[in-house]
Image (tube, rainbow, N blue to C red):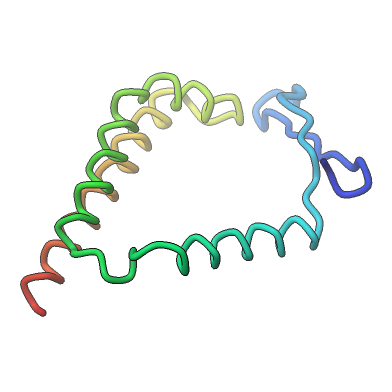
Length: 111
């Protein structure tokens, strides 16, 4: 749960409408997240995973963003961003994952 039951209100910047009330994270939550990430890294062979294999994961994420583009953009626009700009942002997000997929493949080529 939230740190002491605390919450954070999220407002639409364009009309000041309450969009969501989210549980607030405290230091304990951050420590738990860091420990979980460290454990996941230690318990897997990710550090020895080839760039080509990593690229596959990144491309799947990019495709998932594009497949959910409209839904993600609508969520993003709840914060007051114009929908057309939010749609462009989703294309940019996918392009970033594709870019880093290409970089992962190039890393294999350099090693």
